[in-house]
Image (cartoon, rainbow, N blue to C red):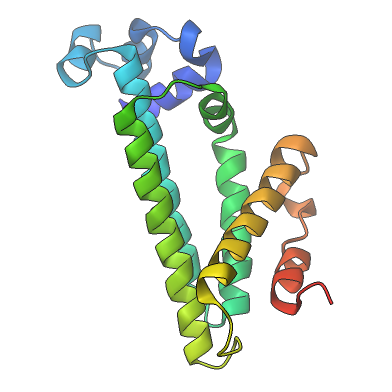
Length: 181
């Protein structure tokens, strides 16, 4: 149901999506959806939660596949851009919605905190292995990395609308690792 909802919300937007469209896309009856979700808005919120968790898990996996911090950052940059491209419609819809429930705001904050935790552990491990300087403020480094990768990928995917192959992931990782000087 969630994947069917993603496809329908992407095609029709929040206002244009109807539960019967989602049911048809999922190959189930409309009543079945209401057994799990009280409203279209509730289904939309669950879809956003699902997408956030999918991003968090995929990002962690991308980090884990790298051996060095440079490899991990490169993997994160690639994953971030790929996720944005694959979920572009949903991300754009979610960014336009001003009134999210308190539950969803709390969920997103918890998801962001979990993602920050992944980056923080990566930074601390790199410090322990001598890949990053020992006197580096790990919290500041974590926020710099997260913000830089996130904004860079959003700019390239949403604003510039570059194909994935044209995004300079190595360039952004070099800036992060070498600094501006």
